[in-house]
Image 1: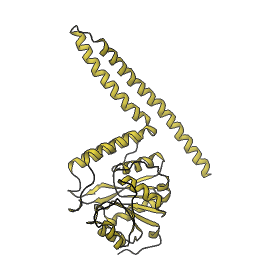
Image 2: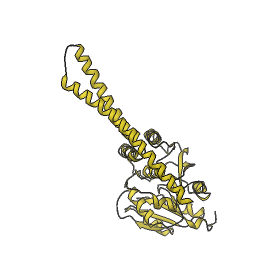
Image 3: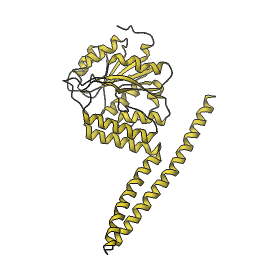
Image 4: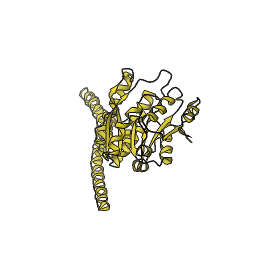
Amino acid sequence: MNVSTPENENVCILIPTLNEESTIVEIIRGFKSEGFDNIFVIDGNSTDRTCELAEGEGASIVVQSGKGKGQAVQEAFNIIESEYVVMVDGDGTYLPSDIHAMLSPILNGEAEHVIGNRFANFEPDAFTRLNLIGNRALNKLFSYAYRKKLNDILSGYRAFTHEAIKTLELKETGFEIESEMTIESIKKEFIVVEVPITYLARHEDADTKLNPLKDGFRIGMTIYKLAKMHNPMFYFGAIGAVLIILGTLSGIFVVIEWIKGITHLPLTILTALLIISGIQMFIFGLMSDLVVSLHRETIRNLRSINKK
């Protein structure tokens, strides 16, 4: 058993929960055995004994005022005043013993936001094939959109400095919250580090709250729409590419019909409009990208001046 230290007392373990009675006791006891007693459970109005069991183990309990994991995390971040925060899901898929690896970059001043990389070591049944494909696709999309290669932007095991949680401007209320926290950290130029962790198969009595297709689509759209202010070339370029592809397909049809002696004047005009609009989107993306780059450089200069 690890003994609690003064440094550990500055760490708050944040556990968002919703009907986690089958796993919450083991998780809380696990973190306490690692020397961390400041455990804060933000509960999403569970209908089982989650709150009762967590309170019995000495955790602080707050029932969230709204709905959704994202809203719970935002509410918790507004309440927590600890110097460091470790956020972990309450479904028992993460090991409390990995907290030391999670905190190490934070305590050493090497990071402001640490993400536990589940893909470094996961049990065979921890992911379904659809989950694996979806996660990898979303990680690739993130890398293209934000020019930062990360392996697991959807991990539920994270560590933050107090400044980071108070600076993040979070708006998403659902399972998009993990991707939004990562994106916000990149936009605010926090030092983000990934560390390898172990990811366990879900407890047989713990039901998943995530719909792979519905929530996966929402997460993808969040990654895309938030890129508008960080990488406008990606955002507007994607629209431009779609318009040009549609215009090209329409143009091919017009040419084939023209060879047959059939003229489609309205479709020809639409083809030209689609291609021109697509090119304009690319130009707009380039101009916006220049503006964002200049703004980012100005912010860096101002921060440099303030540090002096």
